[in-house]
Length: 382
Image (tube, rainbow, N blue to C red):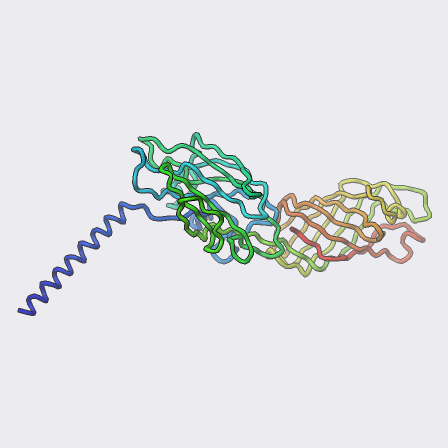
């Protein structure tokens, strides 16, 4: 008797469990997989659409270069299951709050989401969605990208709605490799999403960085809003030779010559951005008219422009448009300022100061055809 009741209870329990599992499966199929606002990257699809901005660790994309202007692809997911006014309750308004130090945000398109065999079943931006607009606002001194557009109208569905938002922004130039996620004194990207029904989602990058949630909104944390910027290298040692062709006439000469400047050298003691040393070449693109006296006499308008190429220890190169200027009060120092126009650290800026050592008797008894140089301080790329 007791054994029979026990067996019955076991069969009922098994039946109840089976029914619960069946219901769970049906519910799981009926409800979309919950996602978060994010800057997605798909290793199986060439790390697209965001091929940079990660930490650079194994399996992650490399960080953005400092002072670069990448294109960011923000995914804002569709998560509503109840229709609104006879149509899918799709997103109609998105605001992206740009972190402090990130500048010059520029609007791009609102686009659909594609996930099929052509994208290796990864979430990728699709076609531009019509009738969406974007403006850059300033809210309490903070840049805000603001997209708005209509709810879908049947027979369109959420598959036709805007779920990717594209924009450009200039990265900061941190002194060290920095992840911007609202922790350790950083700011981060915050996203406000409004559905047609008025439901509002407030996405934040970390629990302690909440921004200002809109009234009645639901706040959720998405650590996939974090973006990382690398530090450009800081090189403590530079040394090499600079040459003048033809040679500069000596100090006692009144002759002036049109001379072209070239230089070769090395950078070492570099830290940051994954490089440790480099070999450099420089060729002036203008010819200066002068002699040793003009070289060693400060004049604020005197400068030499040219192209510098650094081949880093990694084999990658940086091409830099450089200006060499005189330093007031120190006739044998030259300032370096430049912008990287191609290769590694593109759009970053180079700064530094070099001090020259003239050969014995150069400029006093003979003309000057070459001099050695070293750094007067760190050579920085930011």
